[in-house]
Image (cartoon, rainbow, N blue to C red; front, side):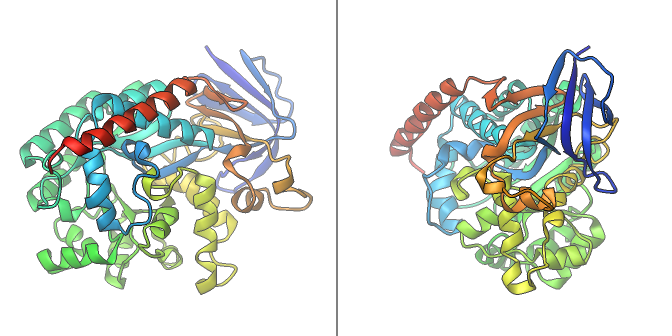
Length: 445
């Protein structure tokens, strides 16, 4: 039995009452057993958290770990040019080793900034090696290979036969779904309507129902994308997904920047989950999602950083701050307040992946997915008479995360990584991107 006792902490629980407590957290194996003051337990690991703040680990609901290697390779482009000129060719150049190190590089960044769970969309090939990285690192994940069986401008190395795409996805699901007692789950990941046939999408619909797993795709990220969907199908993105039966409570849609009122109604009525990615949407000039309107209609919205080449970081502190402040010029200073944002980053993310009974808040019986913050520095002071959640959303940074715990295991302690060799990952990441860029010069697309 492994146990951890975190003592003397400020605890932001995000339970139903959103209580903020002062006291101890007792963890046994992978679960929180007790929260209270001066708990009498002994433990195999004791963490003195005096002057520290413990939060639920962040849950990012849209990430591309396969793209972390491409950071800085595709700056200052709009979405379709970004994909066609840079990202798709780079993804087509990946090999098994580069996928592994791309994933490890991203996971290291995520853990350092307090993210404990990700919804990860990989590329077409070598997804086994991304799962290997997820398994070894200890992070919690809902992940899947991307599916692409259509598109004249898609590199031939990414274009799949429909049958092969489906079979490979099922094979990966049967290998990795519920890995490590459910720490890793599988999701079907058709890239977006533009690059998927209706045959693929309807099969994904049926397989999702058969295996009771999530579907994760992009939708309505860019105005030109919507025009392409309307030209082919005669209807907008979300309406089309609804028409083929994919719009349901298992669907996670990344972005949803350009929605009309009918699409917002479908999202609400069908229980579709929306992953808001403000950093990516701003950098690619895609627009600002109408999140206050979605929340007013009681739609479910969570947060994600998207990929490193369109952000260019995977930092939930950055996404929280952006998500709050970009809405205020239009909707007023009280729109998207700090507690709304923090809820989206924690328990809201848990609801998106269907794990709200397991993660997203600090409560007895839940999984021990936590981050310990040190908020004793110039940029977060003074602290007197300030809501701690406001301090975190508006002032804190990823450098304030000292320790990250997932499934009751310490993955980072005092900024030191415990499940990965940082120096090797940085070195091999540089080798890998150099290899991919050189390969691009030889490949014919």
